[in-house]
Amino acid sequence: MYTAAGRMERTQTIEGYMPMIRRHALALQVRLPPSVDLDDLIQAGTVGLLDALERFETGQGATFATYASQRVHGAMIDELRSRDWLPRSVRRGARELATAIEHLEHRLGRAPREREIAAELGLSTEDYHALLNDVNNGLILSYQEEGTPESEPSRPAASVDAGGDPFAATFANARREDLMTAIDGLPERERMLLGLYYQEDLNLKEIGVVLGVTESRVCQLHSQAVARLRKALPAYR
Image (cartoon, rainbow, N blue to C red; front, side, top):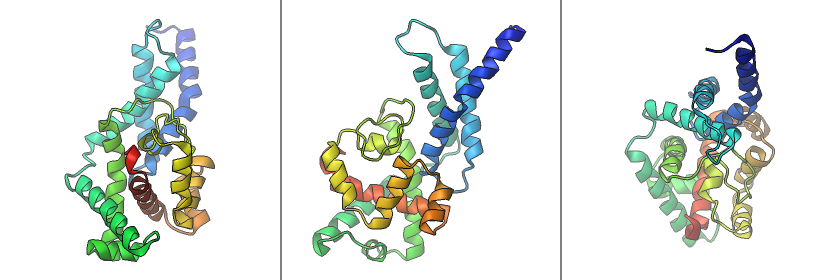
């Protein structure tokens, strides 16, 4: 049982780690539809932190900060999985999207436009945007299934230190020069989006204001940018 001093210390610890929990939540939010509430992710992360406080043992080779970060991120992923976000069609859709972009760039000699990608897939613009939303959802769980180590997110787009961020982890093995070249080859708006999110630390709503689009549209553009980068860096997939 906690004493009054123990309860106060516990409360202070939780308050001190709230910025970390929020960073994890924001890093995941960009890969989810706008219907996912940021507060729900933060609440799940707080439960993970409480679990870390109960389970952590010194002398296990990891600091509490690292352990807590893993538990927080894992709790958020567990919450998303409990809602069954990933239908079977998502992986197929992601593969078809990457293939369409690759074929078009081969034929056109440039980055294809959205309407061109949609036409290549035989989709209307509306259905293409729905596909991007689905792929955005799948980025989280597919990353987790790869077994990449979790730690506190670090968000710079060009960093090879993946941290706990699914985007950075996707390209963690890429050389910095290769990744920078691939990012430079993106359409301007997608390049700006990645810079605003991973370097300037803006959230989805703020990015939407800068770009003059909705939060949902930011998610779609993010999915499209990641698909282009995966195509451009096949050796590091």
